[in-house]
Length: 222
Image (cartoon, rainbow, N blue to C red; front, side, top):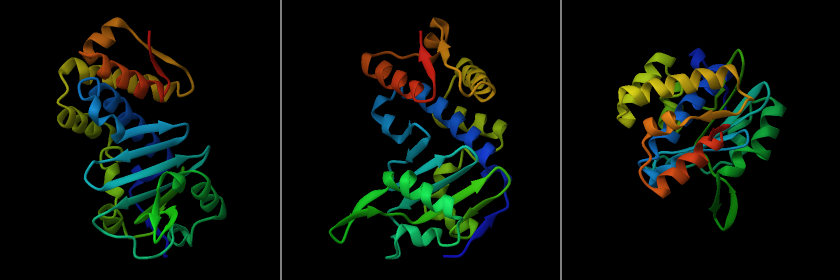
């Protein structure tokens, strides 16, 4: 398929990674009170997976200098082409990373064979980003799962506040944890008792899911 450059810089590596971290922190806070939605957002090493519970899901794999993602919107259909055909114009290292990592999270049974099943792809580095489809089509085919992570940071904070109905204190905690994390990405961050009180986990299941989600991005409960 064709290579379509995404001109919005928010889809390049650093900006997208930061947006995904922001979304992950917000989600980890939110599921303390809604543990049944824990599956919608998760990290497995360098693989970040999203599921909107409405038929769209996807996974992004961040390498040291570039990323690749596969998304599927069940309402669209897969066009009957293989996942690799969506990356026909991508560099070899992008294809190899997709095969080894991102596409392994998009497996489904297709005509009796288990294989990656997607409806659009993304890839990029620190300067440019591309998709197998034109921008608007890419969003329709599953890329809209990244609607919040690709917002300007301040707009993303406001979107999280609205979507998750955060209090003023919760929004302040989200901002503080986010800025610490992006400045010290490899360090473990510890939540204080005050932080946990702000998050407001009220039952064992919510605490368990929130702790697990935070731990995936190196944030631990003391």
